[in-house]
Image 1 (cartoon, rainbow, N blue to C red):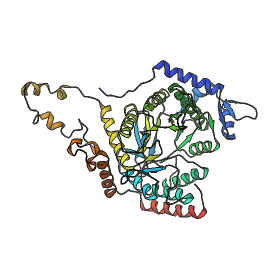
Image 2 (cartoon, rainbow, N blue to C red):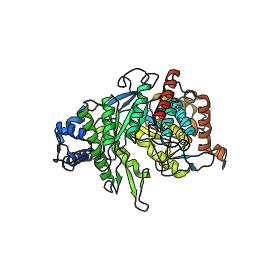
Image 3 (cartoon, rainbow, N blue to C red):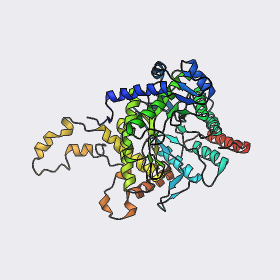
Image 4 (tube, one colour):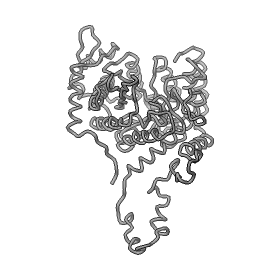
Length: 477
């Protein structure tokens, strides 16, 4: 039997959240600051106040648009291989830059450098279970300003053949991404083999700004998949309850799905919620509290109710240290996406309350995903695996070292002994150089030493020319 389902909502609760979401969209509405989006919504049957920005969505309109959104789509690697994103997939993305890098040598956070972007992109490219790469819109510390944005885009594009997730922070950044995507398409229309997915968020609560409208419209116009994004913060931008956070995120996703299908029926879109909790002691948002997994499981259930691919964090931790809290939180947050699945999950390597990362954590999380995948496979019970006859034959005091099943399963994957988890901790008590993080560091260096991205030379040259010309034009990030 497989371990595949995680539930925190029953069927009646799922339907209540759906119904209440429709009520909120119909009565409270969404503030839509982009006039073209407002016009398209009104043209499809939505209502708005004269001269106002708020759009009210009839229940029937939302229900009809939900039926149009596809349950799966494909992204493409630059070697032509398809990466399927669907309601039954578990596709992971790795980070390459964050405001803080947890440095292995010092065990402390430091600011990112361009060399980190190169290393982390190559690492994600080398890992088999990394399906896409995410580059945050920020410059490295050693190449500040506009040049830093362009140089990191260049570094990403020449060091991986895998699909890319973009979350543009400015209008200029959006068109930098789209220009780069046109180059990577290598003469084909972007819609033919999309290798880029754009994140188009709602600003919680219930507000849709012009930049995010432009991201959504441009992505759909060019035939790219888009990721809906909602980040309700319980206690400040959403009710201070698990249920209230689920409801707010669902409302905002239903709005984005509706608008996407009005713009183009059948447009691929990912259902994505990243709930957080207000820390009233500091005023900060806590993006990875340990019990956030309740929100993650619920989001997966809502996405499955709509037959939409789900997006979200693969894992994360509140701390920027290689410590016990880090490990516990990462393990908890990894369980929902691996066991329940249902789409694409970003953030291998994430920590420090979604503001930090490290290559060692990317490696550990990659192995953790494999471990959780083994748990999902469950236990196979049949005549061969029970091995009844051997137990009877060997009897009391018997040794199974040379049993045929032992020989067969020695390297079969029946038990998880891969990667950084493959050693006994007691071999080197109190020795850091045999710790999990030290082993992960060794594996990172081995991968980087032996792996070369297979980006075609003519694309590398075209990307480098684009970066030089863009910097000369003075495009800002």
